[in-house]
Image 1 (tube, one colour):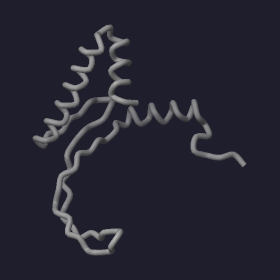
Image 2 (cartoon, one colour):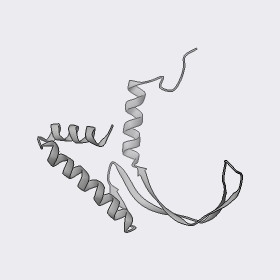
Image 3 (cartoon, one colour):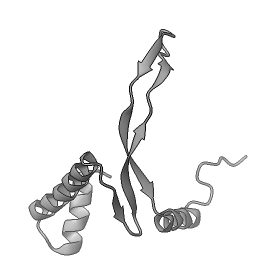
Length: 105
């Protein structure tokens, strides 16, 4: 599903125009990005939480050459799914696709 698909679904569900809906979706995304840039955490109950995690510097290996490479400390944005959303997705997919990922003999 793309951002355009999300805009279409929200526009048809709310009665807003696609232009208005796209402005709201863009506003939400930019708000999340700006908050993460400032090191703030965002929690949306029933959906999940966004946060930034600090990764320590370390020695790594270039898989192509095998050479040692120093990776500096850096920050990584993370999204953690809420237990409620995880449970809802799991239960729905179990019901609708019982053999998903498995091949029958």
